[in-house]
Length: 471
Image (spheres, rainbow, N blue to C red):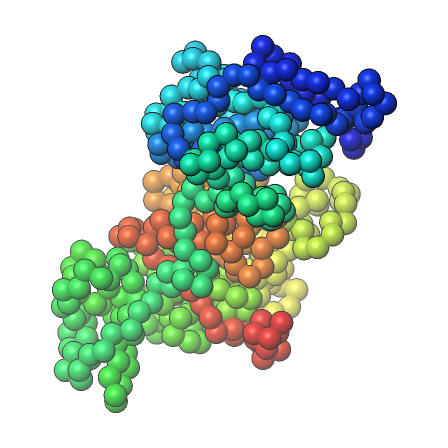
């Protein structure tokens, strides 16, 4: 893309002296002297950049008692995304609509009062107090704005909020406080809610749980449907905290394999209990490759749909993100184009159906009958999905907004299962702490309709487990 020269905005508040007529670079300027007052109302001053507003169109309204500045160059950058059909384009269009509505409340240059109590300013590109910044670059003009505000009021706390790591590094060089934009304060991935806790009990309590199938316990520190490992020096057992009854109850113990699958470890027992419980309408399974999260979800989905008839159909969906470099366009109709992306799901269903060619035909027959649907997540917007068992695989590649879109599609009687591995993220706009899967885990942990399990032990093969641990 051809690099554009920076052309300053002329207004009655600014007097610009160009060096272009002196035979120098037209993009360089001797000085840009603002004559208006942009000091604002508060000592805390927040500057937002394009990456933040494309991530959250309402980011400017998330700060209390602050002056929030959006440099003019940011408006130009956001405008280039408005025709994008993805989430960035949606946020760009939404941001433009919000800003346009704010114009009715007053001058954006002089500051508009927001519902949060802060003031929003759309400020002209400001001069740089240091000669090292090349003002032909948008990032440098953002830094110049921060430096100017800091120089104008030495007692003010000027902070740059950006999702651009490189811009945060540049800000640090010039002594400008900079931080990532995280509207929902989710914990670091290592501190994420696991859905399991241990509890020291005596032998009588263990015996009571085994014989009476419940153990009364008054402990507000338990989350609803949190799984518990009850242990003492001589024995261990497992259970689930029933929030309504205020007691620990046994987990589901299958008498025979569920659609050919039997839990191999404690965490898989917990996951199977959550998946089989029809009172839990939202289940999240997080774990590294090979822990069995997707296979367990599919096995229970087939069992609940085809044997128990608890749901009308099994719907499996996943976002379309390539691993590494994309191979480009694929030939064929829509079904043929999507087959490579959905193949992991087909493989798992065929594995559950049995070995050999018959398994492939059985899986295809179920799809032809409409009992099992496998489709990309891009087609879910605007739908209402009642009485279905919905599995969203690779949910770690979704943003919080996309997760909200998926969950709000669930109609009456629909159960939603999210599965994913936060160590295998292909979406460049999320990470292990702010993706939609970890976001939903933290938000739903206090709900009696949900359960979460973090699986850590791989069961695919010794090689897969070794690779997941050491690579």
